[in-house]
Figure 1 (cartoon, rainbow, N blue to C red):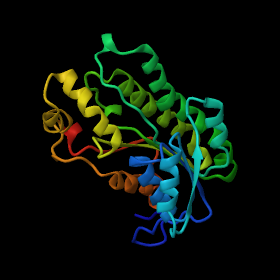
Figure 2 (figure 1 turned 90 degrees about the horizontal axis):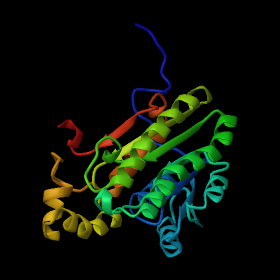
Figure 3 (figure 1 turned 180 degrees about the vertical axis):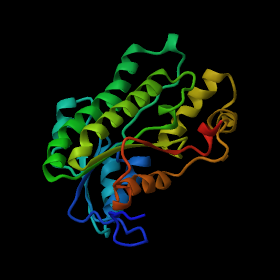
Length: 266
């Protein structure tokens, strides 16, 4: 059987994003910060987007000495026009920014539901829309949407987050189908609970919603459905993002890379 490969040899090449511009949202910490540093280490010029100016400055300091650079950009993603403009000229787009509120549906504030959907679904649409003309023009682009196991499974008390992540999965697949003729891939990365401030902040809400003490939340709620009984580290998610940006993943598009410790194996 004969065929051709996009790879030069039997070994996966080192990720080299020299000369590429990447944009990472929610980059001031957690998964976004880890992704920004990983892409900068591969040589990319990273536009690090977040509302947290101090967190972005700290990130830029951590990036000193890497092959690429981290450029802090303070931006509120509810400003959708600004979000779309910020994505212009990017080669790699990582939609990561998110927020969380744990409440039963009948107690869920409608204004918070609206904000979550704006930041986590409508803003990614606008960012993709802003990035695609440049990607199409050069015949290459990588869109990585940091989804969640909650893009594939639901949990009680997370109506807005689950709705946004399920929507992001569909948006990502549509971008993959449209982008394929232009050399642009679009995929989701789906971690379970990651050791981030976002997860730490929801422990009290989870305890209240489930009627259990906070010290029982991690083992009885967060890790209940995971075969691997630990939180994922942000750097592990960043490596999955980096893989999807490399040449060895050029045939991977329209799919979800699940890092859930066996959650969806049930």
